[in-house]
Length: 224
Length: 247
Ligand SMILES: Nc1ncnc2c1ncn2[C@@H]1O[C@H](COP(=O)(O)OP(=O)(O)O)[C@@H](O)[C@H]1O
Ligand SMILES: [Mg+2]
Image (cartoon, rainbow over all chains, first blue to last red; front, side, top):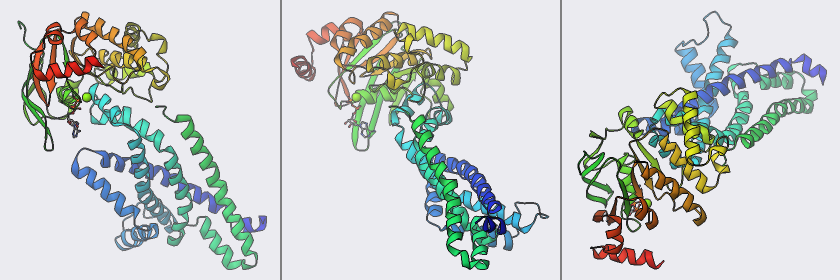
């Protein structure tokens, strides 16, 4: 087993998976929060745009989004997010993060919206009645409670994100499943071991996440 | 009335779809006046409160607070809302903030009071409504009566010109009604301008300058509390009083 791990640099590959996960988690949380705010905005065109984003992106396969970004925007149109001199694997990594962020942002937005729905209208009315404007009401009263209510569904989204990073192996990012594909090709004799090692790797990443999110969600739950 | 009205509604109309909830409402409230609004459920009492601080918009007519017409949505409106306190039936304390933070949020964010000063003033207000020892707790840890007293203190923290109360004791267990009414009576005696939707006749008799009786979106009758409760002139008011008194 150790030979296998060493030969295909499994640890290095999982490290790339972790990096993809962390960057895309931050990206999707930021974009998803913005989308969620658009969705609850009283301005019709904003809420329409937010709903449109969620419905289109959530119902498009992640592979399609990643392919579109990488082959159309990057290879065809030549949009560079990394310095031109960077290695092609770096370009793929950056576009992979963008694709994962955009895709999971729609799930983050939905999680937050369900969190916002757990906050009663009375909270928003009380916020307005003490003179807070729309932005302050969101920042000080609605979102802090919405985030608390959304921690559990956000946890599910982050676990899905971790596993979905495997999709970017298709554009050549050398993450865990990429190493796995190599291993299967060149060491088919230990096929079962390869599967065991890989699934163990993902469980090691996602299981603590699940425990953490459950605990934080319990700790921070808003009593009503 | 000698002085200029502090709150004035002129020919205010409001619909919810086809439903005409406020019908040509005219009401002027003088500084320091305590007006009790009474009437059957669905008559538009809550809506009346909610249009005064524009939680609901109106279809026609004008509403002025201290001579200033209510602005449309935006920063100006937010500023004006701070002048009009509101106490809700269901308290609506901010669930994720301590009692103290519930009181300081408005002063710090809206009035730009320094946090230390706001805290000082908040503690004094909590003292005034008798819940200073609860300052560090969260709303869910308090009884309904305590929460409603905190809600009154939260409204007071912004130094409003008028406070609107929408059935402040209807959601309370009977044994807690008194403690909240006591705070409101004290507030009335201290000269606060108040609009109070309530069926508590004891409060109306003790603290109100005027009783306004609403039915079907209209102001049917208004007079001083004693006259209203003993010699109502309209059939609707007599009918309504008959029903709440036999309960
Ligand atoms: N947001 C709303 N949408 C539609 N109808 C409403 C809304 N709020 C109140 N109403 C209706 O308006 C009428 C007056 O309601 P309300 O002002 O709450 O009366 P009250 O406080 O005197 O019981 C009721 O018939 C009620 O059903
Ligand atoms: Mg009501």
